[in-house]
Image (cartoon, rainbow, N blue to C red; front, side, top):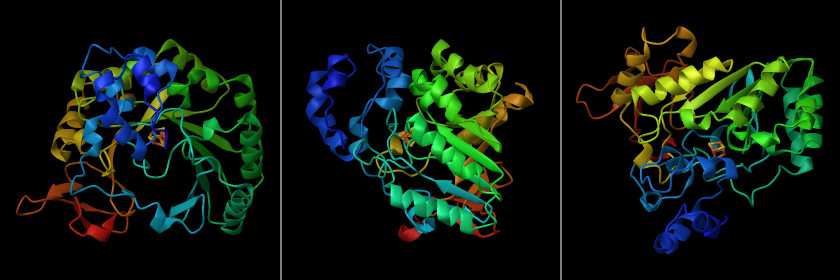
Length: 348
Ligand code: SF4
């Protein structure tokens, strides 16, 4: 991991007296803040929602009993490096484990980092072969890390390879680049995304301040090229757990032709308990949006069930407290009921 937080001190984002403690954080979890995101931070505001997402905090050193090293069970559903398969018709392909920024709440924070790099060519080849051999694979979700950090040459080769697999109908990219490093959405990257198959891009944005003019321009390049763009957001305590903030985020996305897709309940990633809010609080926030803002702006509020049992909507009918009020009960897509947080330490 990059334990060098000197650039954050130099930018005034971290007070020098916090350096020793935060180096301990950075030794465990990767740290990076792009110039674009750093420019949005008000260093005088101790509750700045952009800083909360990217600047490390002493709170990350606190282990909570609910924490899970692999909160959504990637390892359990990974038949070979670079591939995760939870559902018969969808495959996750992870060609890179590097990101432009390292989100402090990241669900893959134990996997990503600047030293993790690319999936080696032979492993990538085996991942493609897996997709080719599994004819039921309708959609490939390219994630990471951030796949838009691949060079345009590598990205183009990856898109071409997936485009050529007859049974793959949809190629979906998950990326933070248009938000965190919008200058990387270049003509060469756009050219790399040219495909015969349906190609979707899902951007990750959590706060309306992330919707900068540069981000709008980057997203505009995608939408003008005919690429459908969706958004996913994480509901985070101290960042966007506020009706006005959520409304501004969702309206802003739709106004730039980006459809809010998922609003994720935060995962049980290590050292992220300070971001987690109660499901009931999330349900109240989402209920407050209904009837108040356009249906186009409504994402689905979801929980990735710890252990890799899939995503479920957190509607009041789908998530309820157990009779003693000790935990939540949710049903996975196979109809199995799970306690949340799980009581079984092996569940995630
Ligand atoms: S960009 Fe995505 S994968 Fe990377 S740190 Fe943020 S949430 Fe994690």
